[in-house]
Image (cartoon, rainbow, N blue to C red; front, side):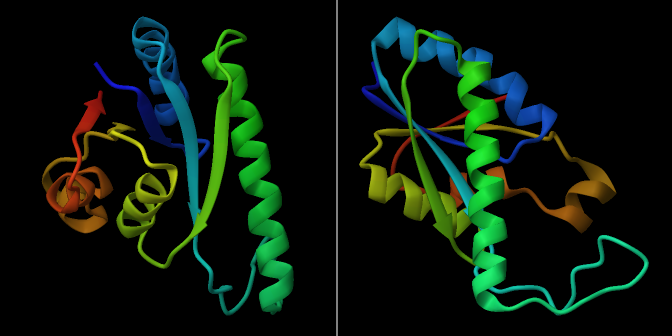
Length: 146
């Protein structure tokens, strides 16, 4: 059915659980898989990992984002299993849904396979739904796993 799956990953439990279903889909269709991680290209004003915040340069921010993306890709590849070789694509974009769509275009995917946090009600209004944004703006099919 599909020959190239783009799978946005963020390291969350929701995306890890979805990877088991992605593996089934990829094996069933013998499809290629590209894992995509979207990071914000702009560093925050301060990182506050401790009680004292500190400023960070653009270059240092990019290094941290790249290292985190590699860790997310490594864990996602483990979750997919040994039978699937996935490519990795790290995209920088200030808008997560636009970054996912950009990754799909770069990867030449024919479907985007996303996990949903299932936010509804007040949480949905306040936190928004990136999955919904991708569905609304995508020009290719979006398969939502929940």
